Amino acid sequence: MLSLSELCTHPLVVGFVAAAVFVTLYSGVPDPDSDYKVDEVKSIPYLPGGHPVLGHTLLMARNLDRFQDWLVETSVARNGAPFVLRQPGKNDWLFSARPEDFEQILKVHFDTFIRGPQVRELLDDFMGENIVIINGHRWKFQRKALMNLFTARALRDHMTPIVQKCALALQRVFAQAADSGDVLDVHHIMGRFTLETFAEIEFGSQLGLLEKGEENAFEAAIDDANHVSLERFAVPMWVWKLKRWLNVGSERRLREDMAVISSFVMSCISDAIERRKKRLEAAAYGEPVEPVAKDIVSILLETEDTTGEPVLPKDVFNISLAGVLAETESRTTC
Image (cartoon, rainbow, N blue to C red; front, side, top):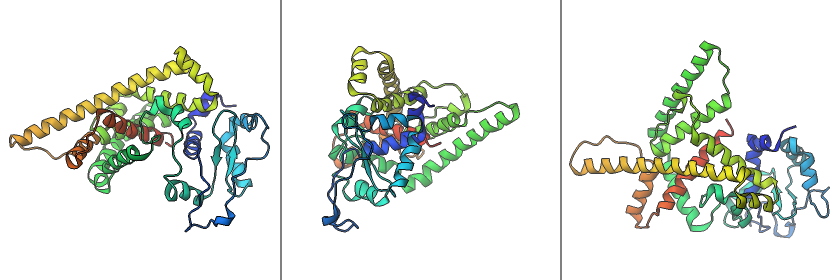
């Protein structure tokens, strides 16, 4: 049987929790152009078998070691129809396996399905003012900045060479292990490959994780912070809040992890700003400047110059952290 910690680190559970969090608050407003008819709109039912007081807490606990399989089996038995799970003291959890439902949530009625206050409270210490949990104008601003980083041209001219370079480093790691007969943790190695790639794409920083093969403090901190934040969803609110107030256990680790993460991100931002400053100074003196790909800091500062909208230091930090968190989510599927 999987422990709570092992369950929270499982990539499928991470993905399903992320999806469930996103649709925790849901609406019954139909799209007139969709297959739903106004007179057919009904409340999404609770899954049968819930307790009058405890809701589905006991049912979920019984399937804790096979939670993902249980959700799939339940969805198949219902032909993909959405259902709701209830836990006392928490928002209802909506699950669906129908593509048309995801279209309604992620596209047609995106502004209706906001990130609720409970989800923000659970993830705020880890994500802060991050695109994952904010709404409105700030969400649009961060989304635009990240879209400008991950363009088709950037993929062709900048990202592909970096991925190829990191792939060669990864190949050397596998070749050395094959020659020596050493056992490799492939999930861990692929996580390092992804972190190395994203760090150079986003900040222009070369961490050398694959070549050094040493434990990286940031790598460990962001993994642990992610796991601690997910564990909050599995316990009553007062439990983790008390631990945070007392600064003990997993909440103490989360605080320490965030100090490491903040230090790393700010260091990358400072390096990117310094490189940009040197390029601008060289160009002002008429010196040849080698063309370089735009990192997230350059994109944000250019946005300020173009639109006149001030970019606050916290904006740079939050958007940079959003890119890093996107990297960690992709690592869970490696």
